[in-house]
Image 1: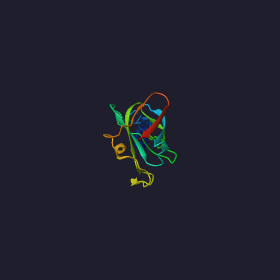
Image 2: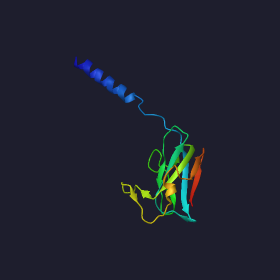
Image 3: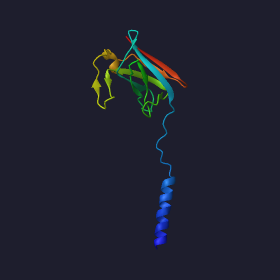
Length: 138
């Protein structure tokens, strides 16, 4: 009886280890690098969020703006530098999550219209292949 019970437990363990439980397929993503500029100078802090338009994947790539104005998107893993192809409205916010808490930054004067998708005029299309994005705030 012990041999049968041991055999059944072993078989269940073997079958569980062989199951394909990888989750849903993620959309293919393309390399994206970018920079945020205002008045000819780099924006030195804040956050960008790419809000998908007319797509079903629901992935909103985001990034912290570095001191030189550059950003590296996060879509699937931290700073993976990719985004699914498609059209996006981009928001630029004077907030950061570097500390683990949403915190308004003091020095940057990012106009409020760029904080919200309904008023941001920043539109980006991510194409197959490499994408170099320059976001110019006016």
